[in-house]
Length: 186
Image (cartoon, rainbow, N blue to C red; front, side):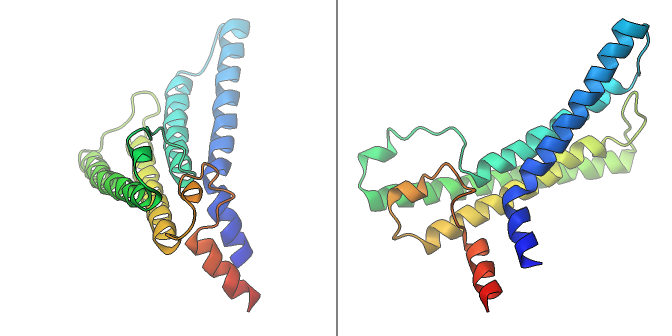
């Protein structure tokens, strides 16, 4: 069970990204064949592909957050000694977390409003919360990944600055996987 959790913690977003990307590619390819080969097609395929793309995008944001792969400019931070750089990196993560929480609350409000007014998609005739749910799940995962990153940095403040800027989060041990691995050995 714990091994499964550890594996999912590392691979949750990539699994969804790959499965959704495959489904979107298959759907669009089928639509192209139907349009150009048989002069027909599905009226809902473009909208569904757009919804799938939005879900892929939010899972990708979460994955980039987990791996600390967002674009950043280090010119200013590099001017300081290592301990100040670490503090600034933690502060940047905290500010990003505050921003993400605000967006998460806003997306929940939009989803509730969509539910209240029963807003539906144009061609699929399903609730638009299928699309807005991507933002809710995406920002929930982003917030969890940011908390993991901040927690790891606070617990490992004595690590070299390179580990704070690690780009391969899959290889970097975080506090949750470490504690679960210790429990598993018992």
